[in-house]
Length: 299
Image (cartoon, rainbow, N blue to C red; front, side):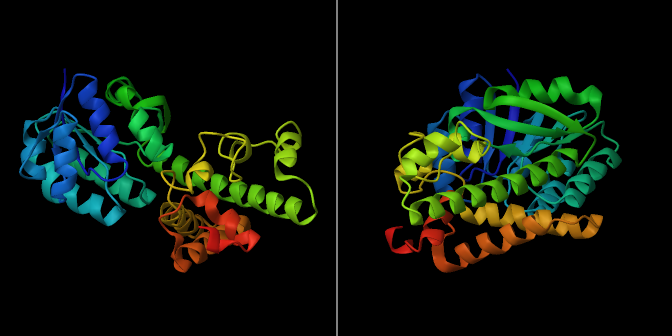
């Protein structure tokens, strides 16, 4: 059993902390939301009065926070100062690469033998609750076994991407690809419908043809073909449009800094930002299909 401080119990963090407690770890949880703390207590976590209090008792610290600014603040003000000698610090937030590298460097510079990793996730809320997330890890190679041991109760896959910041780079690139591919699938469904082709028959054909991809066969935006997809639940309980918009913005910022050309990523970011601005930020990102169909009233 490992004592783990878990800071950030939002849509993703709540399920992750619960799975660590279920695996037998002593989880000290902290969040600014009293409701989130109540849920964590019900899931078997102990509740800390502050982030620093949780960190001070822990061998491992996990943060799951909204943005780079929050990670920088919490790590600088609470995590690094309060961390025990030799503690393992893992940030599972999706943030910019520069912030990931900055907090990792700050942890090393603290001269406390701290080990740091960025380990953003792929899979969404349902995977967080089921313990089937994919983690993309950025850390030194010798730290991988320790990181993997902590993440395994929450994961279906833990993949070492490279040194500090590589996990965030992998997450940004992966989600840019996901956002682009989902738009392509939605456009194809919308066109098939306009051309008089039964969408379910189109799914059957495309899923066995060269158009096959994860956004089609594992997460179909058209209700019916994939029972587990959010499209069958009114586009609820999946990967929020607001989060996809955020990730694509991070990708565009990274592309600008790196001098990379990402025209489809740019178009995808603009489309999801529009969809969010129209009031659909809390719907699963695959609901953009209804924008293309001109059926927003159905959402």
